[in-house]
Structures are given as structure tokens and as C-alpha cells.
Length: 112
Image 1 (cartoon, rainbow, N blue to C red):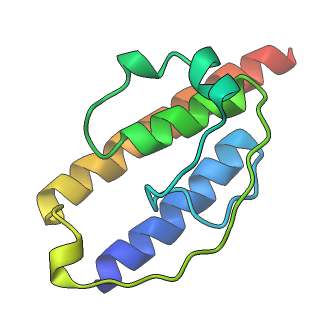
Image 2 (tube, rainbow, N blue to C red):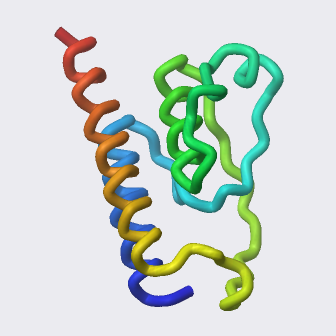
């Protein structure tokens, strides 16, 4: 994995965990399994059809108070394994930060 993607991944994961109160080791793998109940509950049909979909559905699952678990998977990274270039990575990162901030604001308001 290119260094800029690794550093960005760690930063975004830290920020997303902070915003949600979760302790996920990784938010950006894209390898997910969802229960039928999650898919019938969260409004994922309105989500992006781009890379940010993964973050959107996780934020929706957190908001709906679903339990999120993790199963480790080996990382195999090669130039062919990612179709996202630097510019699209930057757009993804900004959008992900915006989603995390939005979620955090709603979480803080709910605490009041």
C-alpha cells in the first residue's frame, strides 16, 4: 500500500472511531458482511455508488445501534488491486471526514 494511503487510512479510521465511539481497527477495507436486519433497516439505497459507500453504511449501522464486529483478513496490495488514484483518494478522504463530522455533531446533539 502506498505510504500516503496507509497514513490516510490510519488517520481516517482514528477520526471515524472518535466520531462514533467505535473501536474498529479498519473502516476502509470494503470487505463487509451485513445481516439481513441491517440491510432491511439502514437506508443504504440513498448512499453513494462510489468508494464512500462503505463508510456511509457503517455510519448508518452505528446510528441504528447495530453491533459491529470484525474478522481479520490478510492484506494483499498490488497496483492492480486499487482503481483509486491520488485525486480520487483525496476526494474520498474529504468526504469521509465530512461524514464523520456530521455523525459526531448529531451524536453530540443527541447527548443533550
